[in-house]
Length: 321
Image 1 (cartoon, one colour):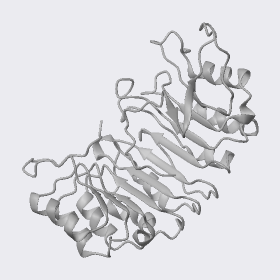
Image 2: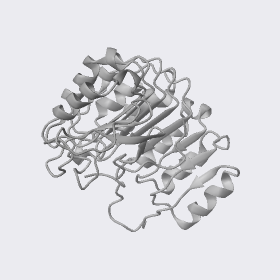
Image 3: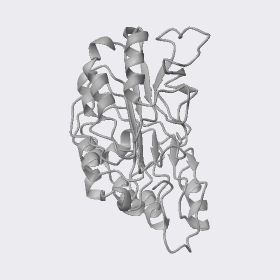
C-alpha cells in the first residue's frame, strides 16, 4: 500500500476509502430507490448528524441499521464519520460495538475513525478513545487510521497483520507515541504520526520517538511519516542517526517547523540516497538550503513546497486546532 499523495484532514471519505467507493448508512426514514450495494464492494460509512435529514441523529442508530440490514460477513472497510456531540463524547461506544461484533465482521481489513471535516469539527475538538480494542478484536485488520488526538489512547500491542497505521492530530499525546514505539507490529509498512502542539495535547518530545526510530519492532516498515512537528529540527537530528531509516523507501518530516538546522542534520547523518522520496513540504528552509538538498540527494524525489518565511517569530505547524 502506498501513499504517494499526502492524505488531507479535509477529506471526509465521502466518495472513496481503501480503494472502494463509499456507501453512507442512512436513517430508516430516508427514501432510497436503489437497494444497498454488495456489502463487500463498498466501504461502509457510519455517521450521525442533526443537520442532514438522510442521516440518523445518533450514531447508535447508524450502527444498528448497519448490523440489521447488511450482510456484514462480507464487509472489508468501515469509515466512522461524524457522531453526535463529538466534541464532548468519544467514539468509544462505536469501537465497543464493532469489537463486540467481531464474529460478524470476519473480513474487516480497514477502519477510519473520525472522518470529519473542520467544518464539522475542528481536528483538536474530536474526542477519541483507546483504539486498540479494534486490534485485539480483529487480528486480520490491515489498516487503522484515526483523526483527532484528544482522549486518544494506544497502549503497546502486538498485531500480526496491521500494515498501515496513521494518526492525524493537532496534538498527539506522548503516551500514544511511546505506545506505538513499544508495540510489536511485524507487518507494518506505513506509519504516520501528526504530532501537533502542546496547546492541543501534543506533549511529546524527541525522546518519546526513540522506540519508533530504533525500528526493532517494525521490521517491515517502508514509509515513516513524522509530521506536523513543532520540534522538527531536533527530530531531524534524531532521524539522521536512526537505525530504522536504512530500511525505508519514503520518509516524511513535512507539515512542521523544519529549518536549516534540521536539514543540515539530515545531510550530515547517515546516507539518504537510498530513499525513493523525501517529503519536507511546509518548512522554514532558506533559499540556499532549498537549493542544496536536491544536489545532495540525486535520484531522490524531494517535496520542498510550501516554504514559510524564516523571519516569522513563530514557526508553526500546518495543523493544530
